[in-house]
Image 1 (cartoon, rainbow, N blue to C red):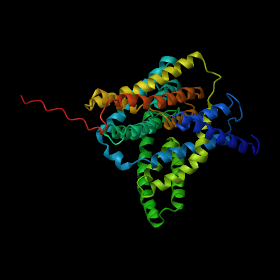
Image 2 (cartoon, rainbow, N blue to C red):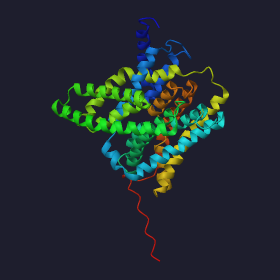
Image 3 (spheres, one colour):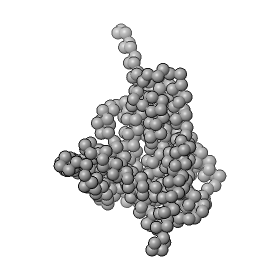
Image 4 (spheres, one colour):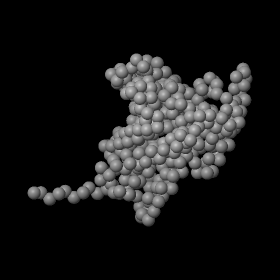
Length: 405
């Protein structure tokens, strides 16, 4: 790229991402789908207006860091702590079943290799991609149906938050094993040390920020300092603990999510993310997607990837709901509500590509999953709620106790 060529590339990315993002919204699909399609069209695979470069890769990396920081900021820690064992059980089984399903799917197509080998880790990483849940589409569908505040809607929303936390932990472990010199004890040790470090830094930073927030409320120095904390923890996570940088960014958001001005920080961060770094990140997914190696086998894998990802979420989360003694229909609502995928799946995929755990050709499978799940989830939820009264759902009645003797 010449000295000023990146200005042209950015202009093309911003314009095309916005046009196709708006088109996706008109078609009731997530805006990120349009931004990815824009990247596909302008990238080397089709028209070739924009090529891959170190500059765009760094911009995309900042974009993913800001997205994870925002995700942490938007987490309601009180709700997270109050959700109790129900949402935790749904999230845990909803992560375990897709993780196993994705691993087995990849192994069925390409083999597992030896335990701990690069091939085995690639199989586990495909399963890790499937663990992510993007509840944004579900929330919008439940809002339109007037069910968001109901018991099922609350359970889905809470479980999705915990699901993302568990997914990041799984990603951290899987990437930790990428190092050929690593062993399970080292990965556990480094992860544990990072958790201790995050808690210590988190408590100290929270009270410092609480003082700053009280002393200078709604002033731009607060989000600027928050952004500095985000970048520091992203750096420290990867440099000193071998943990994914996005984990550090997410932790930074969690540290600040309980501040009085957390929404103010999120709004300021979102301006940069929405206008510049976010479009570059999502468009870069399309730019990096390759069709050169797209074979009938890869097409079959992509179709199976979508089916397995959707069914394992429905089965895993639905099974957890049945264990909690919800009705079959309510259990299906929980499973279907948790099957949408979005930004987190892309973030995990991007991280896998950057550390060499995933080939760029599999982005096609992930993009197809996002599109299919985004379209099908609202339709299926509407069918599941058809014929039910308008009032909010009640919590399931406990079964009567068995008579003594």
